[in-house]
Image (cartoon, rainbow, N blue to C red; front, side):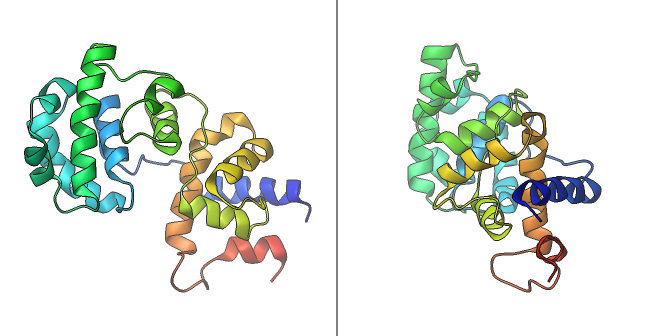
Amino acid sequence: MTKKQRAETVMMELEKLYPEVPIPLDHSDPYTLLVAVALSAQTTDKKVNQITPKLFEVAGDPFRMKDLEVDEIKYLIKEIGLANTKAKNLKKMAELLVERHNGEVPQTFEELEALPGVGHKTASVVMSQAFGVPAFPVDTHIHRLMVQWQLTSGKNVVETEKDSKRIFPKESWNKLHLQIIFYGREYSPARGNQDKDFLTRMLFDK
């Protein structure tokens, strides 16, 4: 198969497997999604979903979040990784959202990435999942599978994102990045049994 054929096969098979893709992080609006994605760095989505209900009950908007002390935020998120740093970022992020954006989540990459704790991947998730703007957030699952499927020779997620955007049609990005994540978790875990990974075998006739 050529690279183009592999990309088309990936899209076709993932559409069969995951015609509907729920957003993995529980949220009710762009702000709670932004917070959940910021919290998910080096932590599983499952763990984030376990701790955010209590957090959002106390501070489900930037106005209430900014009024909490860092230690109060840290207590609410203490079960996840990097809680110290994330608590500081959440407070500062809330202050800036109120100060610069009247408490609304901005709808540009530049403004999102200017917020504490928000890198390009987090901004891409919010732009695609909250606002429907075409984006291709690349996490470790996607990077690993794109390399495995020989659709990128990217050494890092930045290069893999560029290759993904080149090889897949723009209208597929928002759904496809989630489909790849779901496939990675279910059929091709980084550490574990690869016997279920039928798609890689199909692409290379193994």
